[in-house]
Image 1 (cartoon, rainbow, N blue to C red):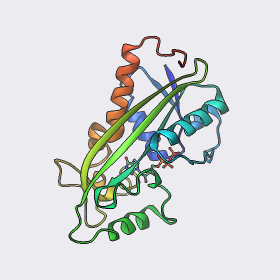
Image 2: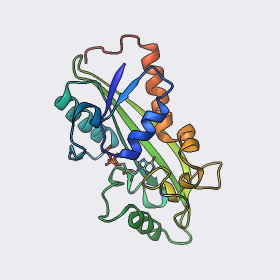
Image 3: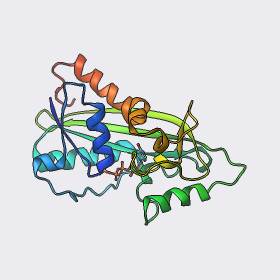
Length: 204
Ligand code: ITT
């Protein structure tokens, strides 16, 4: 099966391609189908599911291809789940500035618990079939950025997955891709496709 990744985030696309490399799914990016790198979908939804659907439907409308969108973010317990769906745009500036500004919102006595959530939307525009898959990884926030910016993206330098002492950026993408929220959601997608040899059912 060929799936177009409905994303312009290079880090996210790399991770999805790496995780699905051993599956029967052939993953295409916007480059493979001649879409512009800045093909933009305005994310007006208030939930990961809404925004995943907005991205999936926009890329499918532009190409006619079956697509896979990922809407994801970091949810901080002491901030009632903030920044959540707004993870990529709650503050203008660089990724590092956002990471530091997020850490600055926590007082020394606040819980440092946090989790990443990924919601995938699989959409086949021919069959009008839509399916969602979710993955979560629990962890905690470091007190400062740690690790290489070349590893992963976004909040990886400040997120320590449960059971580890290093951040995702220190652990590296090979380890991250074994345990991440995205990995868990993609495992569900892969399982769905394996057990549904004809996944494209009309919407009810
Ligand atoms: P697309 O919409 O084009 O896919 P995006 O980066 O805007 O790219 P989202 O709207 O889903 O994607 O925002 C996700 C943000 O959440 C992302 O930019 C990071 O700031 C953060 N995030 C999600 N998953 C992450 C991960 O695995 N590691 C680090 N940060 C992550």
